Image (cartoon, rainbow, N blue to C red; front, side, top):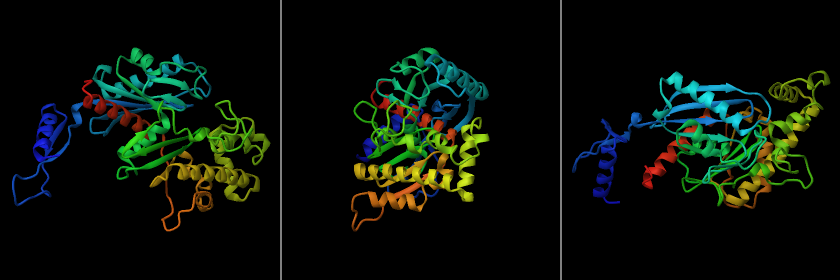
Length: 365
């Protein structure tokens, strides 16, 4: 673009109050007009990101520059429920968040809402989620009617990917993949600096790629899915073989996973086998990502990254062995990021900011 075009566009954004000039003594020139440093105007607007999950919903308020301003969370019952119940819980955590920030719903430009499962981002529809007893519901329109605020919806793995793209390890990368491992297994893919969702916004379901015909039962109702071997519930399902029977009947999933990991580290062979098996299936899944997309970087994200049996050298080595021959090229770069729920919510906020930016670019606002 020509300098004149850039000046005109920047002037328009300054007039709209979306950008601001700021002092930057490090930028000097001896010819022509001195350069002017620009930044996003933080108080140009506010968005909310909300991550819905099995036992806790997390919300984050950010300004137009993406800086967190307030947060809130809501503990939930560990069971499937209706979409109306989920939205009622979402309304509670939203109002708690706004109350802490001293804002009203009308002060919010957009809400980014993410949850596990298959979410048609473009149509705003919930196709399926392990949180819900229902399928195929108009999630976006129902949320907008309830909250009175524009809402953008997406799969929670895409939220983490957006957070990495906007704020994390992927900021300087044109192409990368994110694989999430928690209660389920998800994947997000960035191509040429943009999130790729597939033709119907339902792509990148790595957790539901089949790794064993007629294999273990997955929460989606099918058998042999990758997540049925490496997600939290898959490890818990087999943990009773490594733990004392007296504690396996009533121990919460989180505590059982902690016990399983501690016993694996202490030398319990049964516990080690569970993690080693999960690691081999993870290596298979990662190799498939490499062979399909050849991303510059794969980020393995999620709270389970504390369990290094899932990404130790043997797992990465197995991934390389299962990948196509890359003679003369550097090994695929793998990084881990142990994010908590608040970072998933920040990805939901990035979704809301992205939605606003796209709407402005298309003249919808």
